Amino acid sequence: MPEIRKKYDREFREGAVRIVEETGKPIAQVARDLGVNEGTLGNWVNKAREARKGTEGLSRGDIEELKRLRAENAELRMERDVLKRSVVLWVKEATK
Image 1: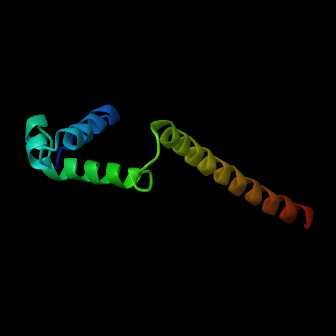
Image 2 (image 1 turned 90 degrees about the vertical axis):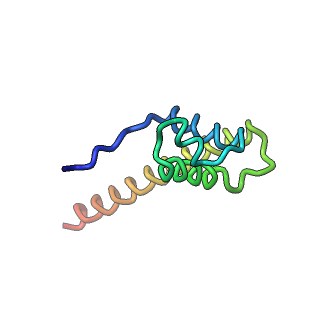
């Protein structure tokens, strides 16, 4: 029989991580309280800690700006790659 997996929305995951970090309770206890698998909550906490890595000492505004700039940077890289491919295709067409 296939395993049935629950889907949790972003707000629930962020709230669960915030409970662990702000209360200092063990992940296992918070997971039981919320009815979430302990390993799943542990993964969410680790992912949140990794996302914050390198942001110690920054204000909340700086962190938000950093997130925005990283997203913009990723979008610009994608656009650049699309343009590179377009130029390659254009050159191939022009040299036929």
